[in-house]
Length: 391
Image (cartoon, rainbow, N blue to C red; front, side, top):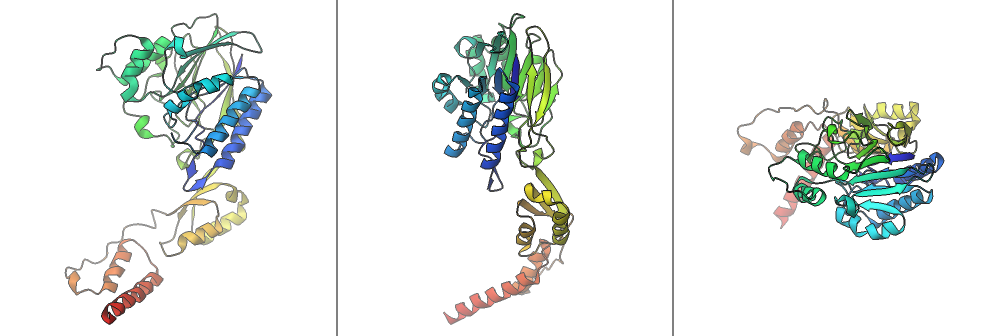
């Protein structure tokens, strides 16, 4: 049977105040087209469909339409909630999604109550089992482990052991007669971060070793880490990565989906299918004039989201000049080399210095070299003091 593995859509993401709805619409349409062209039997979505647990109606509409379109190509659609998603909301919509042929799991469930989904591959007739493990917080891990494994859990056990217990219970029925898949949203020890993940829910106790997955699993489809990667284990363990660069920490990641062919008892043949419709994220440096020249030489810059490090001292209107040259500049900063701290003379008798002199000291401390600010301060100071004396 053939599957498509994707994750970490982060629909509803706003980048420095810029909405990315149109970009997500293009990328999800491309994923649907790939699923149709490849005639996949199943689409595995490993969590973080949304960027926030309270997505806007526009974001929800986009995701629901994408799920329905994926189902319309004839594939089984299975998804689990990630740490950015609302597990309770996902579970509330389970019956409605099930009516549309879409399997949704918000919180960890026992195998007999939706924790394991079985179906027959439409193209090959092979039986398929999918173990579903949504993101489990450390606070919920004890309760979830007891629920899924139905065994007492010692509170002193680590997070990884509780997740191991759940994986063991969910995969206990795996054997060589079916295609056995695991769909989960979690951090595997040693995985490489893309840059846009939430560190507090990725490190510390929030990880498990890849060896937690059994050799009977033909493929483990993971979400949470935004970089496309595979981890060594008893079975194939893969992160599909995010289809878009979620923020500038992800800018070097190449968005893709994974398409795999797998049969009972055999390792899968997997390949990455790159996505071409996401807006790239780039970081550029230079003076305002250098940036203008670069745009003339590299027109593609205006099609990317840009983080700009300006190699000039701070001054009033600098950001506006940069945005005028680079309309897609969403993050404008002074290059750290240009913002080296300046240590003005220390004046022990501050009470004898004029307000204008004190303001000049402040500007020097902040490495702001703009005489217009001093002139504006003088004008405002004169206005305030004149008004006070008149009153």
